[in-house]
Length: 265
Image (cartoon, rainbow, N blue to C red):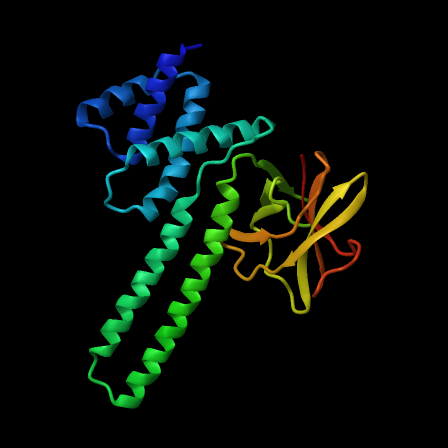
């Protein structure tokens, strides 16, 4: 077992290595250190690599700030603690989700100016401008939605509940980030099928075997992580379980369809 100073030094070097901010000498020293790292340090390193690869998509060619490095360390520890079954009461800020949306908006605006410079007739130009304005409006709406999700993630005290796939879809997984003080929650799901026609997924909070509906949602792209805000979710219960079933469009008063995900607090 290493002392706290050694652990902190390893975290800093590991974050710098993953984010590509170490000098050549530091990189060589860290790679040498990895050869004698203990199991906990290797687990932290692999979690940082996975999280860092996602950050790289959102911050290309940008030197990582101390804040980004600290977020990487905190998110890696949160992931490790969650797998150990710990009751996680902190989740790092997810600002890079908004950054991605802003990038998409900037790209869309750039496309708008480019199309205006094309030698096309007036009718075509007007049609293209209208189409781009619609796209920008949709992106603005998406940014507003992600700002709402960020508010939940930035709450001082949140619970993180992990959900696993069941027999009907064993590869699926999900998370619920619950801000009890403000009665709001964030649902993330992945690897669950696109909803069939006239169907929707429904989230349930189960207390003493009594399911309470927490809203319905649709998944249109199963290859992507899907995020949904759950509003007005005031529940005094400190324990229970979350489940997701496939229900008729509009939801059901009680679960009737197959259960896709389940996770207990």
